[in-house]
Amino acid sequence: MAIKGLNPDWFEYPKAGGNPITKIDHIKRKFLDVPYGQDSDLQKLDIYLPDEVKDKYPVIFNIHGGGFSVCDKRDFHLYPTLFGLQQGFAVVSINYRLSPAVRFPEHYYDVMRSLDWVSHHAKEYSLDTKNLFLWGTSAGGTLVLLAGQGEIMPLPFSYQPENLRIGAVAAFCPGLDYMDLGNKKLNLEQLLLKFMMSKTREGIFGTNKPTAAQVAQVNPLTYLKKGFPPLYIMHGDADPAIPYRQAESLYKHMQPLLPEKDLVLHPLPGGVHAGAKAEFFIIENVQPVLDFLKAHIL
Image (cartoon, rainbow, N blue to C red; front, top):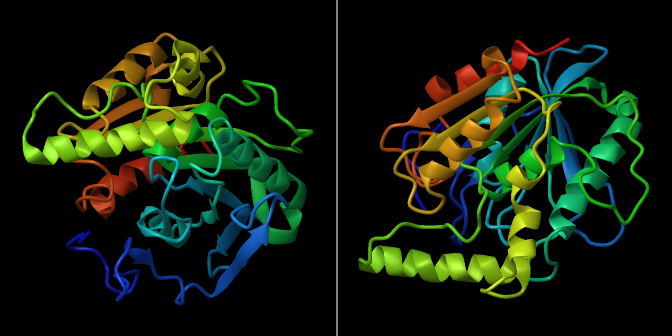
């Protein structure tokens, strides 16, 4: 996968292939592979701090995408958050256990574990958890929409965060209905995509034909209620994987719950799924998101 037009100081393509990687060598203040759980080597997170030393920083809490089954906390999903690092935000980027080794809701459990851990260790890393902003792409977008609503289902551990306030949620091409993936075209590319989406469902649910209850459990719309944090949605209107209509549906469902200033739907004309092209990575599209987060700092 090649993403053109990105900063070569921040981005590289592994010689052995695989997903593009966000470079972190130039970041002076960082804490890598910090464990937040004990069940898997994937239960680790990275913390990046701005060069300017302060007592505490507002936090971008980054959750990568990858269909709940691939990708990593240091791959291309991290790249746009570096603009936030330049503008005074700390960045926490997490890994979580992946399918098919685990099924949903284990991914959500790990997000909640990591949030709980960060809240209890914030002072050690100068993190202002009263100004923590969730940032997630694709499957990560699903997870931030779930985590933004708190403890929406029973957790297999004690969840008692300290001084944790989700200031806002930024969801990039988030999945809602995982039975509604791809589009209706039947060309070779779409047939391949349809096969990939069926594998995604098998990974999440353990079957390509999940029950209605399983599908509802992963859908953030199932849990929506008043009190949801301010929300910024970005989605390409030509997304071949997660249809743009899902973003429109999310926006429609959120309108009765949030004032106009706290809800943004940012369509990317001709934009495809995050990671396929540069739309989700360029400052012209990232800056409005950062400005939205800044407007919700206490």
